[in-house]
Length: 542
Image 1 (tube, rainbow, N blue to C red):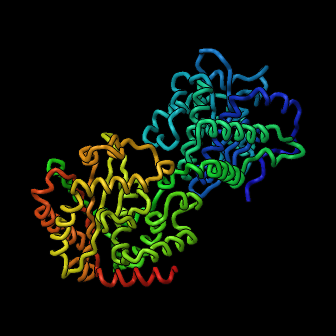
Image 2: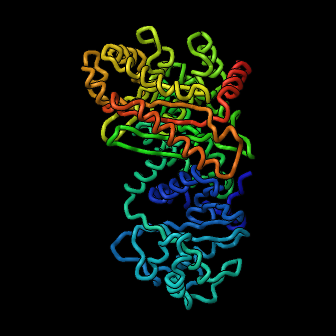
Image 3: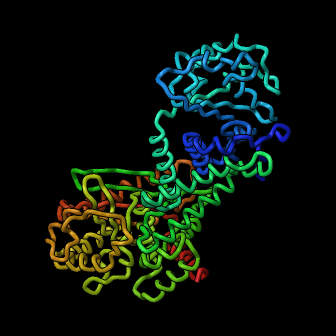
């Protein structure tokens, strides 16, 4: 339950409040920045407008509640703020200075924090208060010197909780916002980043509209009556999140037709335990570990993780765009049905293709060409996956192959890969591959990519080869993992992966010297039991 507003019911009054607030646009933008920060941080419980202070931010810090009292000062001019400006009283009356009015907010049980937000810079050692509270432990003498500026200022004035201006200065943070336009831009950028975190990419106009709505929320809170509706002056985090989710819903509704379905943030599973890059040889190795948990190899966890990727591998983006997440059970069931309808796809083949798909998507931020796994070229599957990877030096097309290798057939598979590559890279086969990719590629659901003429129907094969990368994934029975968990197993599988990589490189030389080939190795405790468990889990999902 959100905290109630910090309004003293005895002294509460609306006299002149609404009329004066409409001119406080600077303060509204400052308040909006706190609400945006609250959307991103569970440490902020509530933002209040015109309650205990201009803005009050209710925090939970290290498990303790704290109130940050924010005064916003918009006085013009070039003169910097001085200690005198902060402690000067009106007609000599106690409690009328800026510092005293801020300190006077300390009348509640929560720990107090104080903030000044100004257009003008602070003068001299007051500038030390601009240093974040988290960084001050490294410069205690600098902060102490600034705090001492208030040691002789109104020593008899105390807050209701007995704190002095020295205490106030010790808890003060000074924020300078010289340019309201930059503050607005920063707030809008923060909203855009939040939307991106939720998998949405609103347009500039959509963010503008959202920000105007947020300002209205802030203005309505400030305009609410301190007497009759004090709690309406509060913006609790749960209410702010509900409001934000409604904005996300609108973005989603308007963007589904052109939704970039492959830009959703993905979860990590594999750890990359070995990486070798040999650009001069056009070769690279990346080896990935499913890891142990409690001394047991994570077989079922790996299966569950890979099954959640099935929709992306087998369903077109127009179908994926109608679902909120790639692991939705309804779309998963539909995807598995699609697998069943293609008899040439064995569980073992699907298992290895899912591994490559998941690694490329998460570790290389790729965007796949949908349903490539089901497309036959010249009567057989040449490359079972096609991904686009964005690169500053030029976007790339990755056409991949995968294998599951038991201990008995590991050597023969290494030899077979070079034979399959030889036939796959023939000129006419590559032309048919490009035609298939053009047919399957749903550009409206992909980010913008520049593959030049490589994807032009009448482009040269040389254009295709200039952007082509070949990832080869081999999930293999590991001699190291088959012996069970030991503390230094990573050293064992690292040496094992290097040996397989060296062997595969020899099989690929010199015929494929000009081809950029990436080897992905995944050691498995037992390939046979993994395939059996995978197929059993698939049946249960059906």
